[in-house]
Length: 188
Image: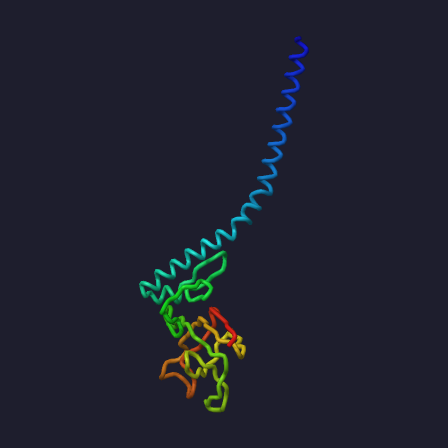
């Protein structure tokens, strides 16, 4: 009888050890691979909640008629920087960011510009082609902006004052323009 109880105890101990090893292997697998799978599985949810928070923040800026926040402040959604004026957010707002001056520095400002889909003939000292910006002829160059005919753009630029009216050469612009970011590009 003693041998039978000893055998049962030994078998029970071996079963517990095997179950413990299986649980340990499962935990190691979960720690090594499971959290990566968990992160990948929740990433779309987190991005969606980030978009929802951004949409809500933009709605608040719109209702408060806060043009600077609505037009100039970027929001991060899933590692991508977007602005409230981005149509993908689906914020319905009467604020028009085209031509809005975002930030004033010592000798520059940031401006949101709407660029038309076609260049037009215009006249400086010589005949040339101009962009149409915010519905008006734009005679200057925008450094870093590679315009493509047939697309309407919403861009953010830095306008740097390089001359005063007293120091500007004849027919020269007082400003130099540098592209900061293309906010949207849509085929006409």
